[in-house]
Picture 1: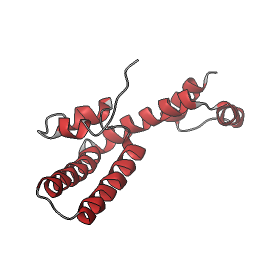
Picture 2: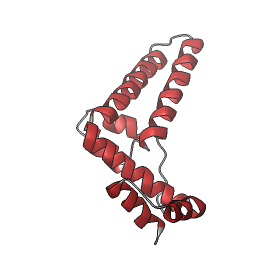
Picture 3: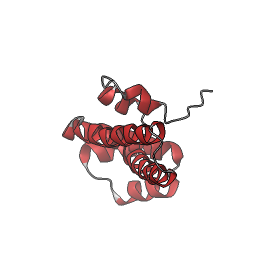
Length: 128
């Protein structure tokens, strides 16, 4: 059985037998990890709706706005650096939990916000 099938079985039934679990853990790769992460995000969204995504995006949005204000109003460099550190921590925490701002789930949750494209501009995307 393929790992994606095992992940789906675990999702739907909530259990795997010992051999299936052992196989999944011993052959798990990046593709499986990404699939499981995406599945977990879908489940989270189904259970909690868009509230979780939106809360994190709002925090990032407000931090970006504050940072822009500090930069355009000539605040001291130390204040700007502190806000940049805060933004980096918020962004890293958010993307670790929910993926890139530009991901499909985050886009569908926040795309109606007038600052959405400002948030998207925080990420550099390489298209192949």
